Length: 510
Image (tube, rainbow, N blue to C red; front, side, top):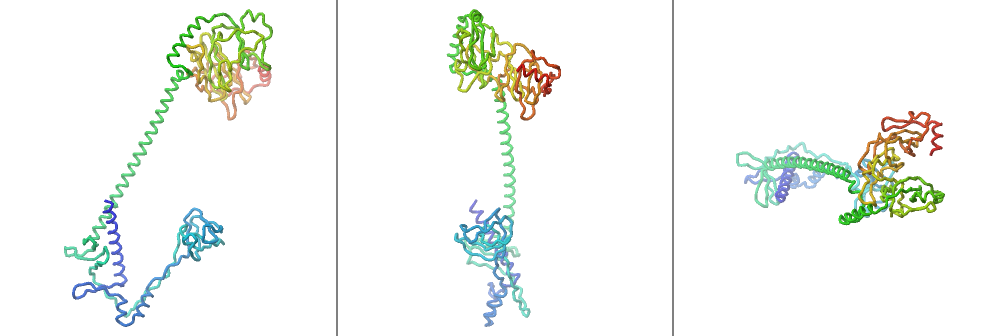
């Protein structure tokens, strides 16, 4: 198919060229045709007539006068976006200037550069130099001369006789088509065949139409492929969203950091149940400090104790009476929670600092506890407030496990820094302070509970750019001049600017 197409194109090109040349020859009368008595075609030229007249020199002069003068490059247009004008015809020559795409240059000469390519000597905008010819479109001025015409002689109209030049591979002739009419034919002198030029032209037109149909079909197929690709991308996005939803639904089951296999977990559960049955249940008072130290003291020891020993600069943040089998939940700076029981710690005294929780529970490097919760029944909610103005309320039962000491991942959201955490046994009112000097009173009941532990929460405080929540505390002990000023009914809310008297009172309590 490819060979036939190549041959067809060659034949058609020769045919068109021959027709053009023949037509031009007949119009100017340079090659008149005469028919000899024997029926053969004779070609007569102006040079031959001149030789017969013995005036060859005059004929040569007449031919020279009718020939067009050679063209000269006088200007050029820059075709590249930005080209360099060199001081010499070499890419290593110094820079004489720059020209941009579409700029017209005056060509004063041309030479061969050191790279073997043609260079133009140009001038523009008081800049002179050289530019490589392949970077510009040259404009040639043509000087032509009108051919000499001898009005005393009349040009004989040539007769349309077939011309066949068998010296070439292809030739064109005006011949009888077998029906009494004549037509142009292309001769394949190698194969000894001929083709009617009109048929070749029709075949070319048909080929163009077929190619146009193929191109249109290709465009349609490209559209279909693009549409299918778009559908596939949409499906991938939908499937990804569904997977995220499913994972979010069951993430509570994936948050546990278990190093043991299923059989070992079953054994641990049995061991934990045995430990619960064997762990003595008696009243104790637990202490937790800001620096992360924990200790428990029995009532007898506490009655005989003096001042509690603390690390320099440290202070007690939690002091609570509970049972020895109560569970402790330590929420950390890496959004994890470590679980253990009060009974896992030895009974202490006021004279000791207690256990450093980060080391005792094997926390990661740089990980510190930020809040301690104590429970015996996993009732109530964990309430989190973040710097970005969002609050999350998670049922305490979401943190319940069968084992007495476990590390749970994704204990709360890491989307924004944690400002406040509290174990709420019942709903209460919270005072929220912002960096804009505003305060609002929000009831925890206004925040819906979410089963997912690391939920980002809901918007509670309306904050402008670069604003944040800086402090949260329970509002029960606040003495405000006008609490209704700060209390909000719908969320989110911006709150009200703190009055001077309320600000002073808060500063004393903080």
